[in-house]
Image (cartoon, rainbow, N blue to C red; front, top):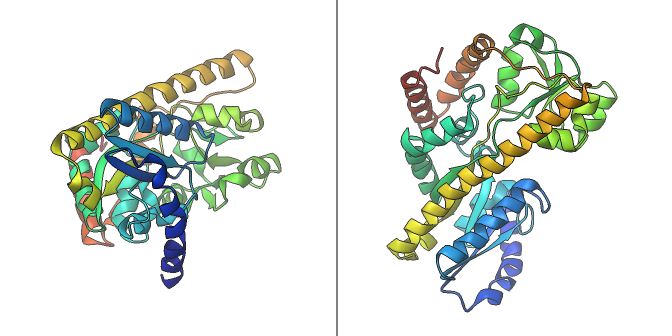
Length: 340
């Protein structure tokens, strides 16, 4: 912890240097993304930042920085508390080490088959209130939820159901994702994203939890692992846009409302753009004839979800907040007939 604090203090000088450029604006905020420059997600996020300035008539100016610009991707929450950053756009699972509740709400593996359902949970099903409570404990205000969408499983071998996961050597990140796949019979391997292509190519792994179909396709993963599962059934990350409570409280109510609406509009726009790219990539893959897309039946998705539910319970037992997330999530899923 001391080492993190030292880095945060050292980063303060860099952060301060960025504040002078937009001094003419009423409110000038520095946000850091968990995505790198040039990434499709980051490019869309930059569009959101520009739109905020537009809809507030220049009263809010957000300088959006790519991952690791000021602090490490997992330190943005600390940096906001320390006043080094004003906000972030980030995968909530990075803070699971502080409270398991962050990991469970960030990606309840197997819960979602449609990103719009997840957004409805966050907006109308109690998820947003939970994030508000969680973020509030760390000096943040949760503005809203976004997501790039359902991730497509990359695979060299045909996967048509849970039984096909048995013994499957697959890349999966540590934590809930890895635990669920292990419980389903797979043999998860913890590898960084940078090693997915070479590991598939050399046969170190046969499948990988990586990202959305269009990005997998663009990076050539489906060419060497031509049995992707699409639409995805397992992973749908919650990416939050949050700001420091202090900054939020200093905003007039009309600007708070505009900022909140901007995030809602951005989330819908991001999904529309990335889903369209996925559809185009899927059509191109099918036309090529060399990539064979596997779409799991509702029965197989339900089997996987049932296995995942056992892992959710284990996470819920680790903290009071995690139990709240579990109770709210499962109540929503039951109300929408998604617990089967």
